[in-house]
Length: 173
Image (cartoon, rainbow, N blue to C red; front, side, top):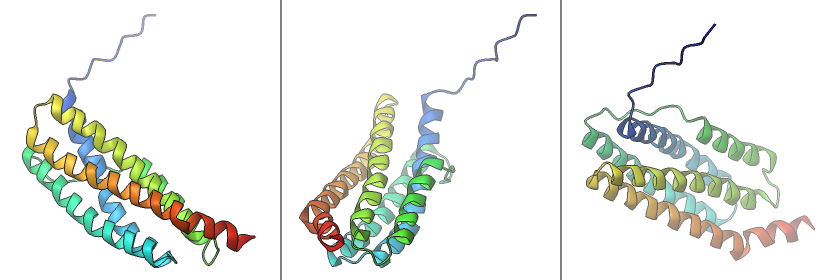
């Protein structure tokens, strides 16, 4: 008995782009809820300040995504993103498991960088798709956010290399 092949979907790159925007919108909204918790848990004043600064940036990133939705003529709605849920859950585990421990801030930096790397990958893809679709205004909005995400990742690297990682090792010895 021959099996029939499922009918091909008519979904194209614009649909994929919209799904990606919904995904990162959901992620950014979740991140705005996670950053205050991370700032509260952090022990380093520089790390606390970094999380607070990125919260303000993330709120602006949400607004940019809402502009992208407007360009698409679609309502700003997120789509559940299991990837960011898992990354943020790992961050919560670090806050719980290392509360008061010398390695807490190093763990928070690592958790925050996992978020940044996810976002950098997503925004890079969305920019490529928007360029392919000829969506110049969306490209500009997404590139502004990508630049912020890359700068945050670099700042987190500097915090880690600037003492957070060493303190975790020295204090544990």
